[in-house]
Image (cartoon, rainbow, N blue to C red):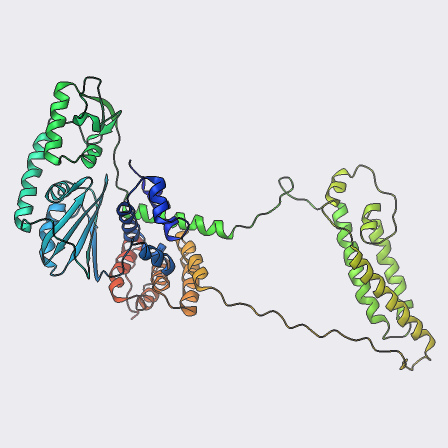
Length: 497
């Protein structure tokens, strides 16, 4: 089964975020953990900034990523052929691992002291896998120097192995002249005997897909396909199914878009929309004015006892407010805010429906409102009995509630800030991404925040700021971040002169 990159990236992201376990996902999808590890390596290769420390820790705990690699080098098979890559392994004097990400899957090769010790490609292992690896001409490669090595299964010296692989590759190219193109679909005919190579094609497969599944090796599989075509056991359908390896930039953009979609889903707030737009009706304006009147009357009444005759002076103003509110409200509105009912206007069905969404004053609020009005009347009565110009000292002073301290604001979570910074960077907002990553770095320094600050500064075109941020990136990661800045934004981090 061919997995498109977006589907591979979604599965990797779900494991990295802790949403799915490796064993459960492998059982559900019918894949091997080594395949998932190859997908993880591919995602880390094209967009390492999409994986923070917590995600990397989860991947390492499940054996899908490793932090023991001291040196990493990567490139494209279109620029460096697989055969040249194998011959160049002599420059590495320690144990290492080569991973190739090509059109039909992934291949792996292990070396130690410049000698190839093991290889795996599709269903092939050992020497046959090396012969398969040198045939790939599209995709990516990643070379890692590791702390540990692989048990040896290939006994041939590397030079002899490379020469044998080159010989098989030449013979395979000669056989390709008798075969359909590797992306052309062929299917098994009814005349094909059981157990022949035609079974690998089934109802429709390409030669490239069959070479990945076959355990016969590159040469023997090609020879049997030539024979099956000659005997009529295979029938080309004329359809094509090209196995495309997306570019690094395209895959990086896909990963960033998936992380942006995830972050937007986390901060999305459900909203209630009435119709296309919610319009305030005359009834809602009346309710707002009525609620404001109740609050204002309570606050005004609590301060009236401090001045003599203030109630009488405020009565005309309160009457005017009451009249204006009553003019803008109907019977149900006045009942909702504790005012006397009046005749309701006709034809206001829309407003009547909107009223059901607004709760009336509950018993507790009515009790508080009544007690506040009683206190106002009591203070006004005492003020009327007291001589003019002399305060009523016998009246007990109201007890004031102690002022509550404002709640303490919790510090911003560095991981949340870094997630928001990644979302801003993926959407092209370099300045916002830099600010958020800087705040995350100040709260808790991390490799991910430093790298994202560098990339965001490059996105803004600020090479000096990118240079300053790059100094906080670990030494082994600086070359990759510097190359990504140059590749994606055309900016090289450099010191300001």
